[in-house]
Length: 223
Image 1 (tube, one colour):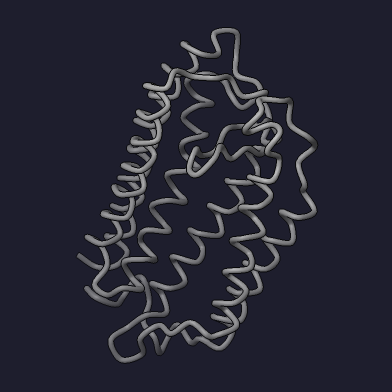
Image 2 (cartoon, rainbow, N blue to C red):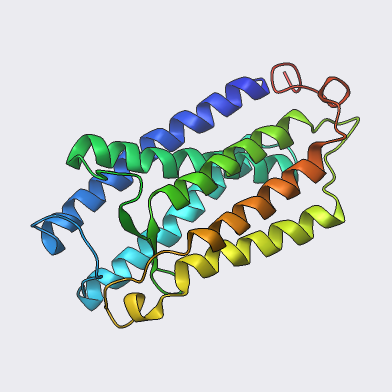
């Protein structure tokens, strides 16, 4: 199976898995938000909380497993994981739109994750990060080959780590909304934009000097 076929199958898996995740959320919202989802966050039973935490952990394991099975080295495995995660997250919202006609807008708020505390933010934020993850994953696969293995640069690491902390802080900073169940404050789009810019800068530094013709192509390599 060549790299294009692997990428396609990882994408198909992620789209199907997103449907399963969306179906679970449909049931949860019928229990806790029967009049339609909106913030502030509602308290769920302790049992359901731990079931949800377990589900989220299992989700990451399954997406990581897809990457491990598809890739032939550590960077390819990570790249396929990023592609799987990004496609899954994007289609999670696509399927919710199909099933619930939600979100009405990409600026609608959502509960994004529960570990270690609830993450909240507008839909456009996780979708933007997911698009960058898919792009980064494809670029890594495209520029990795046995003759010229992918090697990220030091500044790429620094910028990526800084971007991750910045984006996570934008999701977790409003503890009054996430931990005390208050209505959320306006989202810090400026801070989030800084995180996206740092991610984009890391991608630019990493791949600006790469030659896809010498490093292999997602269409040609590893057939």
